[in-house]
Length: 448
View (cartoon, rainbow, N blue to C red):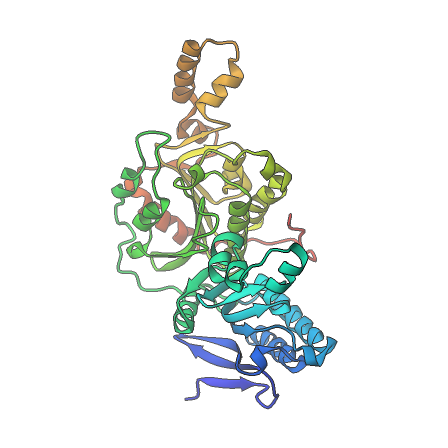
């Protein structure tokens, strides 16, 4: 039985495309041959990429691209740019319809680099690099010499720009990662993610998850350990792990069902939200919503990170991206408050009024406009330090618990940490038939 079906096989160029079997899944696969003119893209190459994307749409299959290109073929002139434009337009049409994964295995320079921004998930090998304007242009315009790796290497894109979702050792490791990613995703927006047999009991008690929360309200812990306690076999696949570390985004299974997990990370700037974490969370939530992955949000944040630089760089716009992504998401959504949930960050982390389906809290949860210290300073400015300390304690006892929010309907259930996995698995099972009828419109206007 043939596992590869070529697309435009007779057309010369650096790009080949075919329908292939990747592990247990079928996909449309594009490969750029870096030994052919250093992978420079001719008009034919752009048309082949476009044809592959159009085939992915027609066949309702994921689009996977292995990219290594020095840019548009200069010898072809503006026609090469036209070919790149065809490819970009076709990839945009795939957005939200079929998963689009790009693995960068060498250079991705100029126009081809921008294709990375159109992908749902980007994998870069350790030898890969990507940039729109290379070291020569940087040196000409700024006078600063810089290497390919420092400007656009895998490390730079994993830690600083957020372009790289994953870094793989080599092309073989990247291919294995592609297969792993496809195991969580459906073939297209009209399909459900695959369901797997689960040998980790859905009703398994998880007291160890609650034990991870420090007794001190300012104590730190790794939220990944909490996630591992809750999901099947303690396994998660974290995206953009090195970028915006104050927010964790990951794929996991619960009772054999693929889900997306979003969680504040107290080990990094106390789990506060800033511009990168808002962008990271919004992009991940939108992808999960596009491909029918239920969302589990774990909340422990004292709010948005303060600072004039953040405000001047657009904290309002970017913070709104996370609220926007959650508010328009129609997949099953469960929110669990582990500890702190204050102010505007409470709203944007999938609160009840932003539209989640089930809002849970542990007894350790603190849900309020702000912490006790800040509230006492505002409400009792003229109090002495001793009086203010007593007022803080009173505020903590009266307001900083989940039961006040539960009385007002903002929390559906306050649960024992030991019951968390069972409660979430049951809820996702009930919500598996959730459907929403959306009003027709051309498209929304995301706060970019």
